[in-house]
Structures are given as C-alpha cells and as structure tokens.
Length: 245
Image (cartoon, rainbow, N blue to C red; front, top):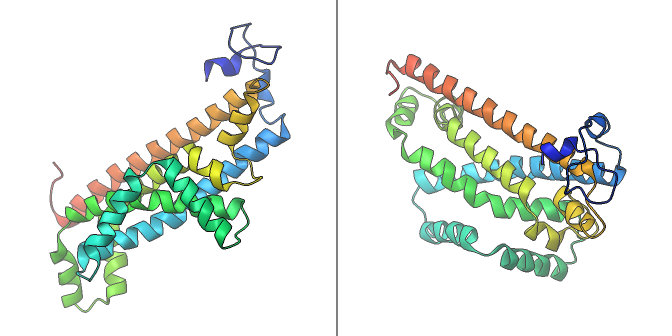
C-alpha cells in the first residue's frame, strides 16, 4: 500500500509499477468523496472508542470489584459478543434499528461499533484489574478518601495502562470494521465502504495515500501509548518504592 502510493499510474488500476511520483502524496485529498469517507471513518472510530472505553472500563470495574446478581451472565454475554460472527451481529443490529425506526447513518455506525468493541475493552481492562492489589484502595478509604477520590487518585492511575491499551484496540477495530458497518451505515460512506465500492471501476492511488496516513496515525498513537505506559510504570515504581521487573 505504501509503495503503490508512489506509483505514477495513469489508468483505473494500480496493480503494476509505472514509475515514481510524489503527486499523490502532494494532493492526497483530490477526491472529495474519498476524503469525506476517510474523515467519517476517523470521527466514528474516535467517538466509538471514547464511549466504549468509558463503558467497558466501568463494566470491568463492576465485574472485578463487586458481587451482584447476573454477574456470570454479564461475563458470558461479553464473551459471546466477541465469539459471534460479524455478519450475525450486523444483521441483528440492522433488524433492531429498523424495528424501532432508527435512521441508518453516523449514529447507528457509532452505536454498532460501541457494542462490538465494549467486550474487548472490558476484558483488557479486567486483565489489568486482576493484577492490582485492592489493599491500595482500601488503604485510601481508611485514610478518609471518598470512593470518587479513590478512583481518580488510586485506581485509575494503576489501571490506566490497561485502559490505554483497550482504547487503542477499540480504535483499531473501529477503523478496520467493514462487515458490521456495511449493515448499519445506510447512505453514509466510511473509508472501507468507499474502497470496496471503488473496486468495481478501479481504486485510485489516493486510496493508498490515505490508507498510509491512517496507518501512520495508528502507529504513532500506539507508539505514544507504549511510551506513556512505560513512563507511568516507572513513575509508579518510584512512588511506591518498588523496582519494576
């Protein structure tokens, strides 16, 4: 994809090398519909990631910190959602939206992606919670901290690397999704949907350029997350007096 972004093609198809050029990278947004689809993908993915990370983190906290009726069922539903085929999930959501008269578009794409990514967030954050010591929270509350203060000053800093990893995973899944989105998008075009539609007449070189930009954005976010995670672990080790191993 990156290589063919520099291909000096002149036809509808970009499968053979015709020469080196920078004009596609100089004008990556020359096709308005493609640019709009890429921006739609980015905004839906960011919105879905924000919502699913918040809800998934709360589910993980509830599942690991409290005992309540239906806890086993909740955990089973999360696993089933991951195991279910995307075709099944997409068709079920389409039926739900049509039944209740919800117009297909940006909102339904976000809702579908939130539903599909919440289990990944909950399980990832839950794995981080499983390795934390509840005594830290208990000590903070014994010293007079309220549950809200305990969460923001103790729990969140400890589990934040897991939350960040879950958010990056949700973002990657949302940007990459085609099957579920194709069921609930209506007339809204995301980047994967636009590219699939363009294959009937030929994929323009700008697709490779925008794909490269999206890939680079994801890599930069992942690298930034890894750097922050490493820094936060070292800081936590210094503050608690333990050496990281």
